[in-house]
Picture (cartoon, rainbow, N blue to C red):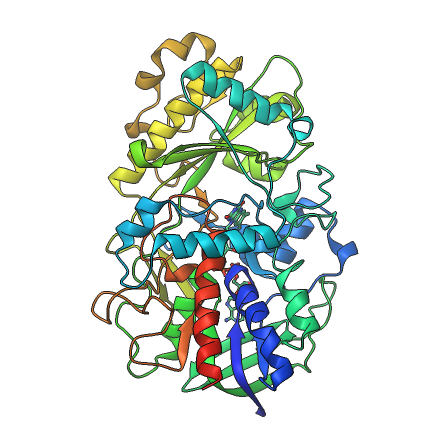
Length: 498
Ligand SMILES: Cc1cc2nc3c(=O)[nH]c(=O)nc-3n(C[C@H](O)[C@H](O)[C@H](O)COP(=O)(O)OP(=O)(O)OC[C@H]3O[C@@H](n4cnc5c(N)ncnc54)[C@H](O)[C@@H]3O)c2cc1C
C-alpha cells in the first residue's frame, strides 16, 4: 500500500468539506500540509450539459435515487468535486433561532451560527433576484399564496451571472451557481490544499485514512484522479470527516474505531419532500428562469415548508402518481404546469438511522412518522389552495384518491386530500437535505461530537458536515452547514498551531 503523510486530512468536498479546506488553506504557506479526498469526479465546465440522464448519473450517488431500506424514500446525494453544492439550487437561508435553541447543544449559540452564515452568504454572492428575473411559475406561487391567505417570502439565491437555464439540480451549465466547486475549493487549491478526486475513503484508522483512488470509468464524465489509481494509507495528526449525513456515519460504522460513541448513525432526518403539479389553461414560463425564488415557511405552525420548484421531465414523470392516460395528461401539459415542492419538518426519531450492510455500504432506515404524514398532507392541502387561487384548473395531489383535484373540488380539499391516501411506496417521496447521524451534544451518552465537531473520546477526529445536526433544521441547510464547518475549522486551526 502507498503511504502518505499530512497534518490535516478532510474527507468530502461539499458544503462542509469545501468550507474546512478553504479555512485551513492560509496555513499551508506556514507549512501545514492539508489534503482533501473526494470520491466523486471533477468535471470540466463543458461537461455540464444539463442533459438529465447524463448529469444525474455523473453527479449523484445512484443517479439521484439512493433508496432507503424499505424502498419508500429516495435520497438525492451529490457526489462530485463540490459534493451536493454542485447540484443544489442555491437558496441561502440562515438557521431559525428557535431550532438552534431547541437543539440544546452546550456551547453552540444562534448568534454565532448567524454571524458565520452571513460571512459565507457574502462570499457566495447571496442576493434577491430582481423582479424581472422572476418567472411565471414563481409569480403564480406568490399570487396564489396571497389569494389563499399566506405570505410568500423571497429566497436569497447564490448565483452570479445566472442565465435562467433552470437546470440547477443537474449542475449549472453556465457556472453561475456559487457552490464550493466554484468558490471555496478553487481558493483552497490556489493556496496549496491538495484535493484528490475519485478518492474513496474506505475506512478511518487511528490518525489515518485508508483511501482507494479509482480509475476513470470508460466513457464517464470527469477528469482522471490527481493521484495514480491504487490504495493509500494516509496518516494525519487531525482527521476531519465531511462525507455528508449518509457518508460520514457509514464511514465511521465500517471503520469500527475502538471508543466510537454508540450514537453514530442515530438521529437521521431529511425533510422528506414531494412535488405537486398543477395545470393551467395557458402556457406559463416554468422551465426558463431561476426555478426556486419563493417559499412559504409553515414549519413552526404546521410542520411544513413549501418551495417553488421546476423539475425536468423524467423527475416530474416519476413523481406523478398514476399510470396511462391520467399520467400522460399531466406530462403532455408540461408547458402549462406550475410546481410546488412540499417539505415536511421531520424530527430525530428512534429507528430512523444510518447503518451499514455486510459489505460496509450505507443503509438508511427511515419510516414516515404519523407527524410527517400529517405535515405532508397539510402541505398538500395548502398547496392545492394556492394552486387554485393562482388560477390552476387541475391539481395533481398524490394524497388524494384519485390523485387529481378539479376546480369543482376546490371547496372540499380537506375531504379529498387525506392521510389515509398517503401510502408510503405509492407516493413518490424524496429528500435532498440529509441531516444528523453524528449529532453534536454534551457527551457520548447523548451525541457523537461536541459543539466544535470533536468526536467524544477521539480527540484527533472531527466532523464538519450535515451529520452534526442533532435534529432537522426546518429550513434549507447549506449555509448552516458552512457555519458549523467554519467553527470546526477554527478549532482545527487552533489545534494545528499548538
Ligand atoms: C438537488 C439538491 C438541491 C438542494 N438545494 C439546496 C438549496 O437550494 N439550499 C440549501 O441550503 N441546500 C440545498 N441542498 C442541500 C445541500 O446541498 C446539502 O445539505 C449540503 O451540500 C450538504 O453538505 P455536506 O458537506 O454535509 O455533504 P455533501 O455536500 O453532500 O458532500 C459530501 C461529499 O462527500 C463525498 N463522500 C462521501 N463518502 C465519501 C468517502 N467515503 N470518501 C470520499 N468522499 C466521500 C461525497 O461524494 C460528497 O461529494 C440541496 C441538495 C440537493 C441534492
